[in-house]
Length: 337
Ligand code: PEP
Ligand code: MN
Image (cartoon, rainbow, N blue to C red; front, side, top):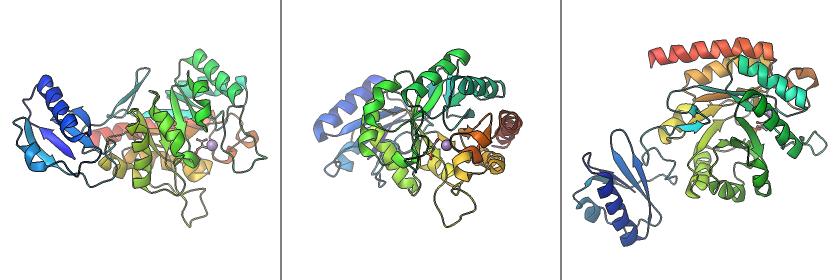
């Protein structure tokens, strides 16, 4: 249920009213102070909450029941875009952030070399997998804790915030110096992991599962947010369809849909969506045109010899040209929107 308050209510009145509601109905109250209005989201068992008695409070403008099962991530609870500030780089709210780096961290020279080159070409975030979710147990599993140390070295060398995937709640302590924790597609419905991440205050990049709907993705974000962590970035990375030409099918429409249904920022990963290097550029541009708040692109110095995902990785030189086009597209979008 959402309660929209009158525009002239003071912060003290909001706090007082929220307190009354919490006590009277034993529900959790989520307050959003927006540019246009203050919205209270009531979460929990709201069946017994009577719309007429809430409407009778002098501070209340209107009251609605929210039908969707996701509440805190719902745009109705928080009409303004959520903007996540990572070391001064803003994700959401009109900025476009490019996250780039290899699929897997392979060595110190590799990760620092790629970090320096993508930074020069316009990427603000360094991605790189240390714990790798591989389909085959015989494939390279990542450098694990050593990979995280190498990412930290690359961060120290460049100042770039790092984004890397977590696969188990048991590893959370190892991620202390990680700036954005990625939940990969295969773990989108690892609910115990999501609950644990709800208790940490780091930004979480939540990738849509291979075969998950938009609503299921929002419910996974709700798991994290209901634990108290509001710093969530949604990531569309392609879904399984009957098409076999590409590794996955980029669901471009998910971008405006996520942004309509939720206030969370949306990043697109054209690399895993396509599985093919030459498709990364058109899909990146399509994602920006669709309103994405950021892109996550795999870049490798030597794709044919990459330990994972070489077939979809662009070289640093290709990334430099791509990055220029992405920024041009982003400016064009700003001028027409
Ligand atoms: C990755 O980012 O390297 C990755 C494994 O992505 P996804 O979970 O989208 O497959
Ligand atoms: Mn990959």
